[in-house]
Length: 161
Image (cartoon, rainbow, N blue to C red; front, side, top):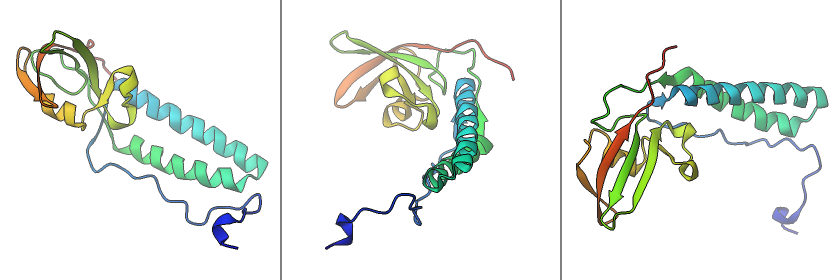
C-alpha cells in the first residue's frame, strides 16, 4: 500500500514543516496593524505554553513556526502614521472610486498582514493599490479595462506612539 494512504500515528511531529514565507516588501503597517501583530504574538506565546504543558509536540511545532513568523514581522514592522494631506493616495488612505456606471467602492490601503478585502482593507502591494498610490483626487485610472475615478482619499487623524 502506498504510504500516501497510511495514517500517521497520533503525536507524529512533522519533520519538514515549512516556514511561513515572508514578503520581500517593506513591512509597512498602520498603528492598528502593529497592534494586531502584537496580539498574534501574545496569543501564540500563550498557545505555546499550553502546548508545552500538554506535551503536544504536533501543536508546538506549528505554533513555534507561526511565532517565528510573527516575531519577524514585529521586528521588521515600520509603523506609518496617516498623513493629514488627503489630496494624494498614500499608505493608510481610505480611497473611494467611482466607476463609469456611477457605482462607488471604498477601501483602505494597509499592510500585507492586515489586509482583509472582505472588510475593505487591501494590501498596499496589491495591483489596485499600486495603481492608486501617489494619484490625486479627480484622477482617472483604468482598472480591469474600465475607467475609474478617484473621488475621495481620506485618512484618520495622525496618531502618535
